[in-house]
Length: 65
Image 1 (cartoon, one colour):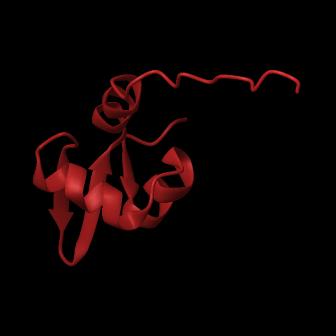
Image 2: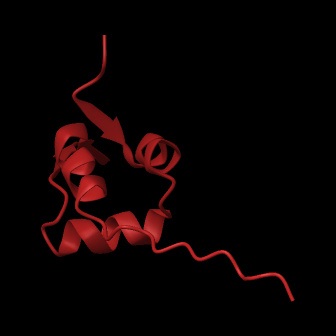
């Protein structure tokens, strides 16, 4: 069973983004968060949408010299 909400530390591991980057995304309403007492819970579906909307990486392999 996949959890609906992730603690911030779990979201960091899940997404590969830093704690600071997640809090910035939350402050911009790019990720939905809820409070349960002192615990911040991140909605996993909103985190997935956020990650899916990141720009595509443009990887270029340097040519051989």
